[in-house]
Length: 286
Image (tube, rainbow, N blue to C red; front, side, top):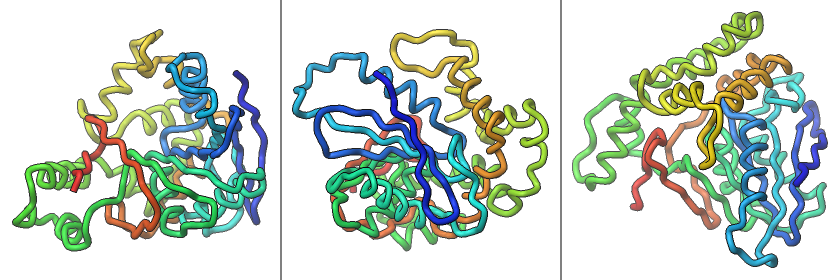
């Protein structure tokens, strides 16, 4: 399998995209965000096509893997305004330019914010979205969470667990995100030193927790037959940021974004959600 890598442009930015051709639409644009990048997606897509899952050929679909503006091989925006709302509109433009009239969209991390907003915008042709980082928190619960208050009364056991996970994330795991949201252009160390960049990408303020634990273990893993990250994949990720000098430009998205993190955004189309054990929070079924 080969990924067809091309570039597109929209106003004052260019995007890199990888296009995996299978037999039938619909097509699925997949987005990730800092510090994940195209190298991890590339390897995961290669693994999927080499495995035989016993599916039907007529169920195959094309996959588009766009890099966000400021990330990877995409261009660095020359003006402000490239937040997730604009990226959501741009991905729909991308799909239309590629000739697809119906598709679904998948995203994780910042990509989840983009597909959430695609679900809010609900452009013609977008059938559904799929995320592992959903915005599900009701407004009153989100307000209490941001204020550092105890969990509201009346929450189920699953909802209380999710609240406690998000409370811990806000208090212990997002210092890096707050800095990038307030002073992204002052992060000279990650543009001047590969060691500084590596340290920034590897540390998420969570000590032995997730996601740092999985990354730390991967640094000592040279191969994996079951899909875990390896040392080479981690180094590929860091190297891509270094060679494209996108450590700072990728940080600007945190400054651009002014919305909530886990609050319900008002998606009006069908949504599929995966809940994995090591996510920042495990969204309750409710």
